[in-house]
Image 1 (cartoon, rainbow, N blue to C red):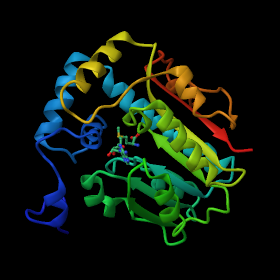
Image 2: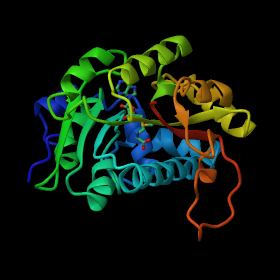
Image 3: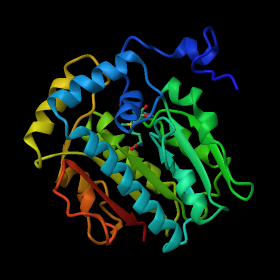
Length: 271
Ligand SMILES: C[S@@+](CC[C@H](N)C(=O)[O-])C[C@H]1O[C@@H](n2cnc3c(N)ncnc32)[C@H](O)[C@@H]1O
């Protein structure tokens, strides 16, 4: 099958800027994926040369997301997900984890990167009983996201909102807070909010590497103090163990002892 992202002259290809490193593609590179360009590989290597821990951060964050989804489907009975800032398809995308556990699960993915749009087909391989959809939209327009999501999800029923490594892209903290509040206002009682994001206060080397990266002209991503990440959950019932460094969020019983990393997350229920 022809891949629109790599077909010269295709609409998707024309919108993809291969001259500037992009968050989704660098992240894909660190996760071990192939959907990235030399400019992303170069930026990813430069970053990991300065701060090798970034690969652990990317992979631990993905593992946190898997454990959140597993809890939501198997223990909280959630069968609808709104995953904003999806990123490029990787191993264990949200719908794959969720539909393995409950094939009836419905998932809406949202991202604003044309390369993610070009690869969206790989995200839309739903089970027959469930559904997946992709919305090309910006997080700064939560009303449009909710309206578009309602075409696939029944937003009068509990839904899990996933914001994994995207809020750091919203530079203004108050704006980020307002977006999260607006999105959760659009979901009923019994819905959940899952957030994990890069944090300040745990690892000075990571902070230095990220600050330097933000100076390079790449799309910036801002690390936030843990109390600011925790405050995104205000008004919700935060599940144990609260907002913690992601390896410490309900680790699998057989997982090796972990060190705290500069990536914090939590899961909360809307009362
Ligand atoms: C670091 S990646 C995270 C991917 C995935 N959620 C994960 O945690 O593995 C950030 C993603 O957010 C997307 N993104 C950044 N800012 C956005 C915005 N304002 N609106 C929609 N998507 C955005 C990027 O295109 C990218 O795919």
